[in-house]
Image (cartoon, rainbow, N blue to C red; front, side, top):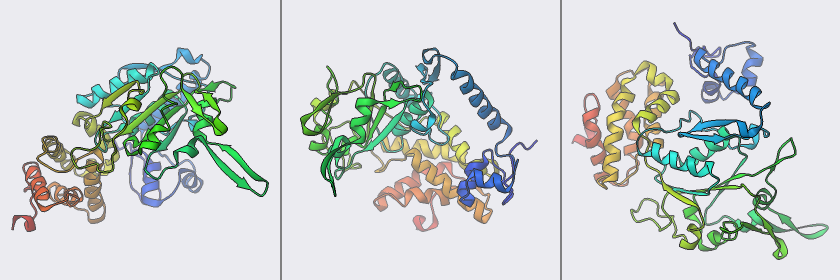
Length: 393
């Protein structure tokens, strides 16, 4: 029996109508329900999950925060209950906590560190879920979170304080990071909840930018520099997470050329460092099926074929036989391109859709040899062969 609700605008069925509305019609859920009151928006399974979550939070709010924990990567992580979800980092769409393969082990190690209040440095290839994991930790444990992105042009000093002026004269203005580290998030209950601070692309920091965080990460007592030489203590319990593509020693493979070398004495102040690896297919397939329900329902052979293609491309990348990372983002680009063609042209031939989708990845590769290698690696897993006619010639 069909359980997926039907969009009242176009007739498309989907497990989660709000996402379909946003992608297909650029319409928010509130506007849709105003036009179609009472229209179903989620399949039975999704509705049950949402109901359980809402019921659970009603119970949670009555309990002391120390009594509630959530299973995260095999760790029973403590959950804060006196802060709104709006103060947390958003849970990534279709997020699944990896539990298999090397990434499952990576995630479990990070979860242990965060649950014990340790700062973490997570490095790994693009699209391996580094930032997504920290967002999920914030959302699922109800830990208020803030994100700061490093790039060589970022004015890191203004994160702490800046010299402002107006018609009344000049003044010092405290920055968002200074206030967050010193004061935390003030919950409706009045309690000061320590923030989870995520600094992304940390290996793109210049020497001066990285140096500005030395005092904050002091292993004896973290301190926050303020204007006029003032120094404040970091609120006890504040969590730091740094993500990067490299381990801090610069890029040695030529893929992340904007990465810089980070002073080892600064990296040493971060409690734990972990390398992330590509997601195991057993976890990844659940994510892509949720992200591409139409493709899965009408031509599941495309996703099945991508299992072998993904493994072959990633193995070749790891062995440095292929110059290019086949990340989760790359996989989604391939499947997204295939689903676009299915929707617009009605094509349901798995081989044709796979060949067309793979171009969104192969054509990004930097040279003809790499592109030829990628087609050759994909060929055994694509019905009819992956090599395009122009490549065969």
